[in-house]
Image 1 (cartoon, rainbow, N blue to C red):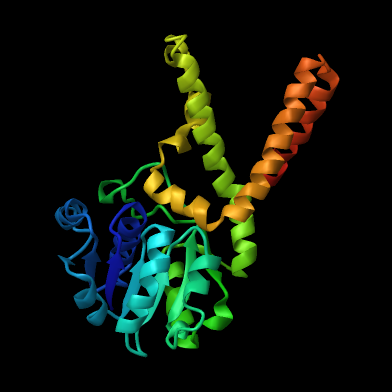
Image 2: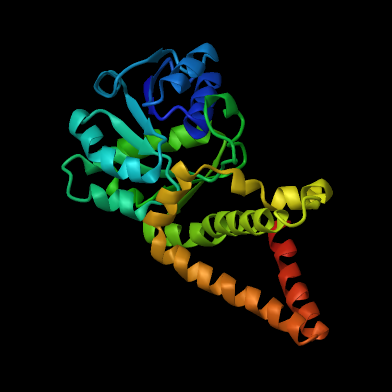
Length: 281
């Protein structure tokens, strides 16, 4: 199978590596506005050739879009215009409703499968790609009933080849859930990093004392705005809802400390500890 991947970064590169390793892809075309990424991907043998958008689409059985969600939303109608009824298009975006809505009236909508691989790191570019990165993670397909049966089957085969476990969801539900488990985590990490950077102007020893716990907490703050601003924009209402709840929780901790209500502070921490039983399952 010939595959074109639009966006040869962390996600697109990792998908390419795994599909090559599994023998699913006989040839992979790389499409990217960043020529340095394409050259790096060629040198690392992540892709077999770098091509322009039209050539890659016309000559592929499967097109995978691994670019920021606003770019996917804008480009997807053009990609669908170029494909035949025998080709399939998948994306890998962290938000789904806006992308699906952008092509709801497109005559080739059934050729598209909305996919979200639940994995990522703060790193970017093809040099960060890891072939086994998706193993054991959730691969979400949204609004599967809107995709053609053969396109859906191909997408399922790809996801299983990435060693992911399949989950089917409604796009609106997906965007709500990812706001809670992913998007708010990034905002919190950015905010904490900015807090410490502001304080560090006065106390230059802060980073000398930083522990692994601090590093893991602010790890996500290294993530690039080119990816995350579009995600926050596309999922604005859900992120705001979660952010309001998060701020409310922070106020509870602040109030407990201000009033020296250490029993309530302990209650808040014990309640938070319940997450351990959920995550350790």
